[in-house]
Image (tube, rainbow, N blue to C red):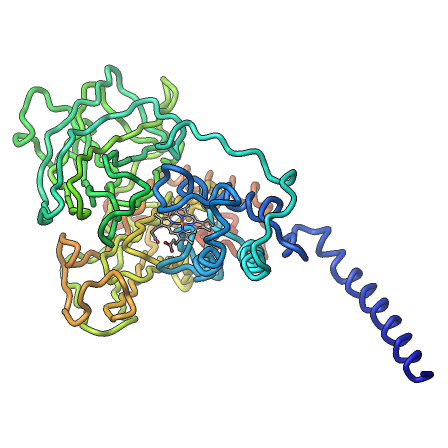
Length: 492
Ligand code: HEC
């Protein structure tokens, strides 16, 4: 008995001491900006619903692009285990939400980043593991309002251009080709702040695709397009190279199935000319296993009237479209491509463009002795993503920087996007061939603009001499060395 009491007392003291110690340990972190942690008891209404509303519901709601709604407890409850599995995969194919930035390397600030924190992932797991309880209905956040089922991530567009409707038969083979141009209807020059493309089709979004194809129920797999003033010329008479020397013709980010919206740098919004038309000579259609009528809608968010861009777009390629060589039955194969920046450059977005074997891409900046990995992101050919840096995180790279991309290819049975990994794969436009490009958006800066951008960043981030800024190798070099007298470099 005596011994028992002592032991009991010992435990009590021990527990109290431990608790005090824990509180002491946790408090300082709790008061700082550290993550809130995982609640002791996780409920749907209090803990899960806010995560779903922020990061899942724009797709997982009635009529959204996802196969099921997660908006209410009744909707989400049957998917609890699947939610745990899909959110905890890490930044690679299959993860939900579909966003693949690796969090342990490179820049971490992006516009519209829907990804979950480690704590949120652990919270979903704990909810699933503890029987997925509902919790107190009063804790449920008010339902989010959506304008309509086809809500635009860019907000209500100022201009929507509807492309011509086409029909893709259930058994139709793949098709690549030209579609008729469509006038934008714009009567004055305007600049575009953001852009989003939606496929509108007659497939019931709740009925599944009927076939497990890349792209699910969607039939427009890509559209490479530009806007151009046609001046009465026919589509065939247009010069596709006008985009390189004529401001009447502007190339826009490629539409790809599953791709997200584009937000342009406010200082370098792109011109949409009065009287221009949407022109495309490269559309790829892929049957979804049903007779489908579909058209694309291009939503433009415009800059205010009178807006004038500060920065010019930087036009250079970063990729290798020629000698891609991907062996059969092998994971983790690497491709490399380089370019040397001919002018100071701000990188607005990173957009790996690979095909089915694509598993990952890294973007690296090499300046003198400094080699920085700007980002590594996973890749899933079902979900083509562009990653838009925030104004404070966008890489500011001096002229002479070498940009290097590394593509990681998985042509093995573990990659579900590969129809038959026993095939060697080379370059080409088709989905069974390969591309290896960073389609990201960049702007060119003059010497003065480059200095201004770096000064702004020093101030905004309160940088001291001891900081290292990924993506800004000269940010802390003050006074800044005089610009090198370029001998060979071509200013664009
Ligand atoms: C951008 C749209 C989008 C977002 C955001 C999104 N999902 Fe999904 N989700 C989809 C689509 C489309 C599918 C079906 C295709 C697939 O499995 O990749 C899917 C599939 C799933 C599945 C598998 C369903 C099955 O049939 O097994 C789960 C589970 C899931 N999502 C959970 C989530 C959770 C949890 C979140 C938020 C943390 C989320 N998703 C965010 C679009 C999205």
